Image 1 (cartoon, rainbow, N blue to C red):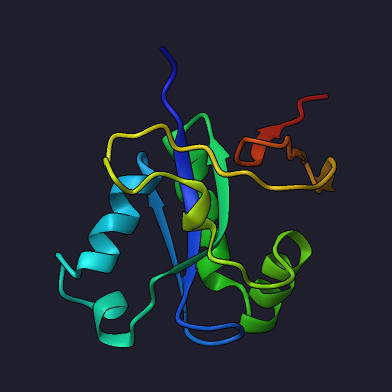
Image 2 (tube, one colour):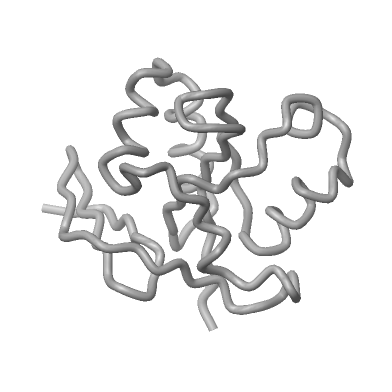
Length: 135
């Protein structure tokens, strides 16, 4: 069974404080943020709304994307979120937090999103999958 890694963005409100993170289990990690298990930025600022998620097959790709997003300007992050989640809806409603080990699929609507060197596919019932395109 192949492993998935997720880059996610949390917010405290629309266009408010943002947090970018990476995990291999979205449900567990969101549960940890909401329970304030680890003291730090998210617990201090009340950043608990899951507003954006991307799935990667490699931890190296996920960490590279996380690093890239952390260097983005706030406005760019707002635009990214609003492309896929214009209402800043909390996506945790679409994943099960009853069990941190639950299946982590987020229902997002959209089409194929193309960026330099990658294709991001959004399929109803799954988290967008970003895969590199090799010529």
